[in-house]
Image (cartoon, rainbow, N blue to C red; front, side):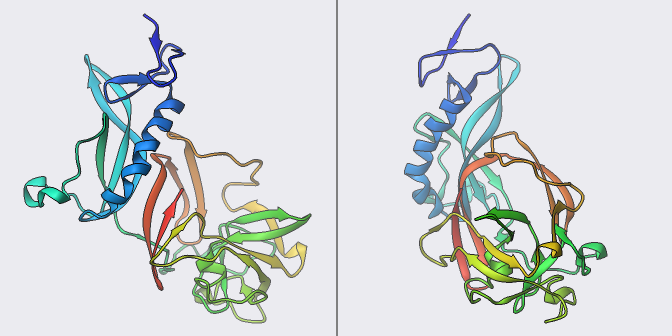
Length: 279
């Protein structure tokens, strides 16, 4: 029996179809279809009790004895509460149109504060500095040096706005220290770069798409394209459901994960307030 995509009406190769509700789709069509409804109803869902974010992701169901993957709208909450204890208007509907919802309990997302890290190597002064080590604006605590990126034939340090630009409070040309001040970095001894550019964060209104900033190294030889514990990145890729990922961080070291949601509108807590991100 040949399966046909409910969205585009083209044949689905054997074993490659996914469900949305009771119908089968190509995965790209399933995501596109679900995303349309997620965007239409996300504001209503975000206004409900405990909700932190809304995305598109997997859920699994039994279908004639087999475990089938299903694309759904994922509602992220601080804590699951049984609907019997919620006003009717606060209950997450089981369906939006013919798309199932899945309620996922997560902790509140907080822009990292640097707790004490026992990964001393990552908190030390390292030259050339690599991705995954401590770095920070002169007036912040510390964060992670993400990687090097190239712009106009120059290499720059990429990290977060809240690490390199102090949640919009910094000025272009401000010193950047490695390690960050929390980890013993001192100016000018540990100065490695100057803030070059940042994407301003919108707090308590509007939508953000990036928490990012660039710093220009004082000298090219002070930095390396390597990422500690991972190696040198070779290309960029769009996130996909099920994609395996790895991170190298100042506090966490090497951690592994899997993309379980995409196109998620999520609330993040900062020192200056809350910011919503859509990615």
